[in-house]
Image 1 (cartoon, one colour):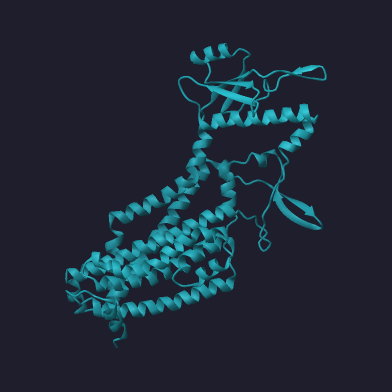
Image 2 (cartoon, helix red, strand yellow):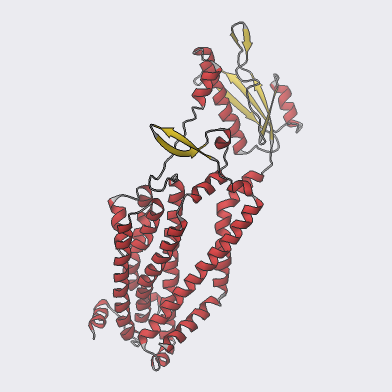
Length: 449
């Protein structure tokens, strides 16, 4: 047993001292936090403002003796777009050429369908897509309001209700009482699944290359003279597993530090709306207050609020369980492949059957995310060769306890069987040189006592 610990220590230290390990450990959490918060922070801190001149060339309408313009004076300015008005399009275009404004929008009426047309003019710098969409959206909304008022004699109050019915939807888990955010759960599940996929290939490939290099350099002949071959294989597998756990632990610590820093610098992003009790048919449910503040909640705030609704202790614990078991399953098989070949180029015929279940799981991820309770998703999350990826996608949505227990139990049994088979292949293959290994040879090694 002491020799096994020596092997584990040697393999562990040789990998954690590599520059690639340090770089991935530092850059991983940084990239994750940047992907989560940078777009929202950039949008929030962007101060670019555009001065837009509206030229309303449409005919005026007379209502109750008052002459009313369809578009003039109807646009709402904000920090991104500031509106002004001009009756002369030539004068507005002159101001545009002189750099006094950023864009001129002329609105005209024609006999075509649709009857209203808009013409956008710019000079030195083309306005942003957001600014143009703001003008276009408001133009369409103003036209609709005018039609409802003129043709259907609707009041401003009725038009406001039609435009903004304020029908809020709340998807609540009746077991926990928490709101459900399916989109965020889909993203989280996909990220966890791809992480398992990536690390299984990364660490499994490390084991295969390490075994193959020792075999090619004949170092293994010296090692097996003093250490059992099974200790060599298991030492490598355990050491790489510890490397992965070390990296995950550092990622969690660094991510918490970075998120805390963002929270201190931008506390508004983490602000969660107050809750109020709403009584419905003798039932009381908790919901966000339906007020203007809720409607103006930023994308970053919604993302943070949705993340807070997820049971992260369960997700992280299950991630560690499935990472370890999935890694042990595939790592042992990759180690066995490394012992069978003298060159990585010859490993393709043996790695293909190993990777097919993982590729199948990745292909099925969109279907599982769309319907995590489907029968196919349940089967894929129980079958040991696909469960490390698929079950992690389903867990954020909520999975029955018996399915998780059955999945882990079957995965443990498969891992034990894979380690047993890999040990038998390793013992025979590690000292076999100059021979093209075929599947019948592998079967003989497995049957050999």
